[in-house]
Amino acid sequence: MSLELDAAGLVAFLEEHFPQALATGFTIDHVGEDGVSVGLVTDDRHLRPGGTVMGPVLMSLADTSTYLAILAREGPLALAVTSSLELHFLRRPRPGHLVAHARLLKLGRRLAVAQVDIRANGEAAPVAHGTVTYSLPR
Amino acid sequence: MSLELDAAGLVAFLEEHFPQALATGFTIDHVGEDGVSVGLVTDDRHLRPGGTVMGPVLMSLADTSTYLAILAREGPLALAVTSSLELHFLRRPRPGHLVAHARLLKLGRRLAVAQVDIRANGEAAPVAHGTVTYSLPR
Amino acid sequence: MSLELDAAGLVAFLEEHFPQALATGFTIDHVGEDGVSVGLVTDDRHLRPGGTVMGPVLMSLADTSTYLAILAREGPLALAVTSSLELHFLRRPRPGHLVAHARLLKLGRRLAVAQVDIRANGEAAPVAHGTVTYSLPR
Amino acid sequence: MSLELDAAGLVAFLEEHFPQALATGFTIDHVGEDGVSVGLVTDDRHLRPGGTVMGPVLMSLADTSTYLAILAREGPLALAVTSSLELHFLRRPRPGHLVAHARLLKLGRRLAVAQVDIRANGEAAPVAHGTVTYSLPR
Picture 1 (cartoon, rainbow over the protein chains, first blue to last red):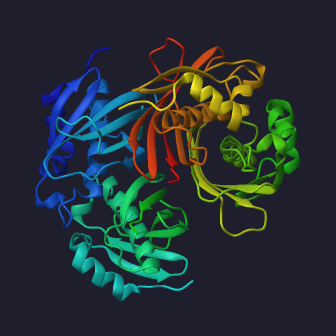
Picture 2 (cartoon, each protein chain N blue to C red; picture 1 turned 90 degrees about the horizontal axis):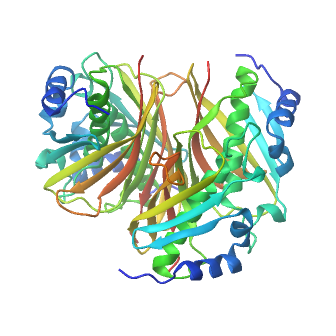
């Protein structure tokens, strides 16, 4: 198994096709054969009153980390689209440095499936866990 | 079955607890015994390059419409939190007026479950469909 | 929209390809443009000690009703396979006549998505609700 | 973290409360702090014509392994019930020795969430992956 895009290649892809991911504050923390990690240091834009990280921020982390895990393996498939996203919210995410790790369970010709865990950086217990599927254009 | 909050009551709740939902452009289009509909007229903030509505916007519509369907029945439970969200993306959502309708399938003491359909306003075929669960504080 | 297979055609298909569905006691209660309903009158084989219908029986009803809803529209695609199944258990299912209704939300070239509701026959509130996806061979 | 029930304790529990799990051929292959593995050597009862393992067999493995992972930690909670099951079918499962491993992601007072991977014994790539939640009586 080899990688088609490294972290710099993924950032260049996002700059061209999904500038809002970078504008949101997403960073690419790890790219490897075990998957891709996307980080976010939360600020006021990402929080609900009371200081909890907003659900859609976590969903977006899950979606983006899966997308980048596919691109790392397949190269720049701009037209890959999410076909389903399922996320379980396990613990209240505190503000700070969050990391979403997406690991591909299947990378078929037409469908990719990844498991995603989101953790506060350095913690063992995930704050969210789910499965994201992408439909791949060929 | 009676409703604890009508559309005006739900807007007042959002203004106090989730001002970002209103700032995003969400509107409350319908509140009834069959559930709650949340609308959004998309603009550039909600679109990916190429003009598709971003996935997290749809996820946020699904989450918010479920939350409001619970509040309409139960009153202002600020501490209800999403425990899971699962969304299938069925058709490419075009820019325009989207409507998410959440219908409660179960409203228990500790858990609420809703089915959500998101459609372009006036269209029969949904662009997304899923199930959202909330944990209820008592 | 027209149907390729009616109830008799679906039974003939099951007899040839999935005799165990009929052996389990599944019946085809309705075939229409709105989807397919599969019935089951539970007996001891389907119950846990204490008299609750076993979860896998409900999952099998959800899966089979979706499969038949696809076949009714597409004809005998023996090689269609479940790609995901997600089911929420809402109420304790009592023994008796259960009906699973699968309604296709999307029937694409490669993927079909159905929403499934399982009810005690004649009851309004579902005992289970979920989404089932199939990968279609072409 | 300590375990309330070991493999022998779990088998005794199944004999009393879920004899059909053992009658189906399920075995308890591993009980540890990392979760519980349930095995099944498939025979004709578990196969579709053509030799694929039936989907409901995999769903039942996912459900049962999660249930036992909860019991190993909590002791004999006969009244814990599945509240949702979501399973992605990744590869065609061949007949033989299947192993489902359930790992608890959250064990709260009212809700438990596990991730489940099902593999052919000794293979790295899972044939199915999903998330199962249980509602816990207290």
